[in-house]
Length: 615
Image (cartoon, rainbow, N blue to C red):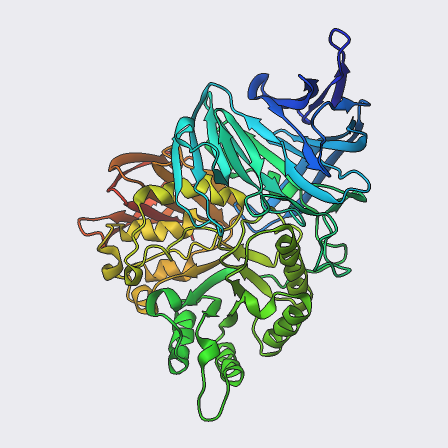
């Protein structure tokens, strides 16, 4: 079966849980009075002996712990759909709930093991009043080479890096997910199903990465819930209060890493009987990045441009709340522009500052008003620190928007934790340093390396509203990103509603205009190209229907890459977009391509490549 229990020299039990095809094994035991675990992949240790434990009411549940039984075993095998790197997901795992005791407190350690990783969580002992900290750690083997990580930021907007483990600052919080290479294998660590715990970051000490709560350094009350309506998830699992899952994805290559669904797999399915068929991915035009606050008189031009581009959405961003005209207030004028959008076939998403809807009553009233105007989505910005209370606020907001059938985009926010499975209307969120940082009016410039690290840091947590594709030559003077690199962002960076950041004229007048009209935002299949190297160059081939799209983004060093087209099923026509001598122009070629072809592409620093192959 999935669990084997052994004794060694009369000491505490070791409980081993294996994945369905025995690719991954987790050992749980007590060593030197500390509840601990190791993880093996293909019989090779990829996580060394690592501490476990949660501190509640001044009791460390991982210290002087006794494993009091072999555990209750169960298995899971199901399928579901998701908007993401592929459309269909298989959720197949073995799970053990291991009874433990420490300091007179009874709890269970829950371990779920997949063929591509591990998730673990703790039940909260009955009567617990306060969560003070967590000991869960990941002890990286000596063979760990490079690691992708991000600096500390309240809203996950620090730079991403790929370095040696020793270059990560010690005793300072860093933000996940973190991805690292161990003997040619790739592991990525994060959290999932975080409903009412404070957001988790990591703290490094030598080879050990420990769970840390930067927004709740002194802990929090368990009965803290301020947003717990009857339909809002309460963070329980099988009827018990639990911590979020602590997750470790394990893959033999970067393709398997990027295609892992572990974070959504461990989250609940949508509430039974709930229909999310109204959630529609798509492309979105918006004005704040390129021209600042929206002007009421200019809105028809933006909707018309979105219609010409055949894009589904337009975002009315910050500034609409200041509209006044002919005795009409901002709400009346907002309805007029939403109505105009409907006439030209473009739906509206509306921006709001979170302070307008911080408590459940005010939020519901505000969202109902937005819905009554005819908008289909909300972008909520400037959200406070991700404390346990605020995580419950996020859950309440997702529930309200699901009930009202509103798409949801959190900005200035915490990272996602897989709950887009439970709430597919949580369609994208920021929690990333995106193109808002590469902007001339604030004299901000993004280093080339950041973008080729992001797929292995923030994007491992889920879709990110990076607001891709800068084409304005003035905005690309300070850093010579090429147009091909900018377009490749829309392929590499997953966001089921993708907000293209630039002024519409640059898309309408672009030599890539026809491609902008047809670019998808969700995919049926994704292949990570063999040229990909964390922090250096990223190449994805993604299929939607019968059409393949290739996006390649280069980092700091010019290079030649080769792209085998073996993923094609037959000979077909392709449109290829290359870098040229100017970073604000492209070479465009049409070719008949076959599965036997290999493309050779020269990439400038900050350069890129795009292809559409098939109809």
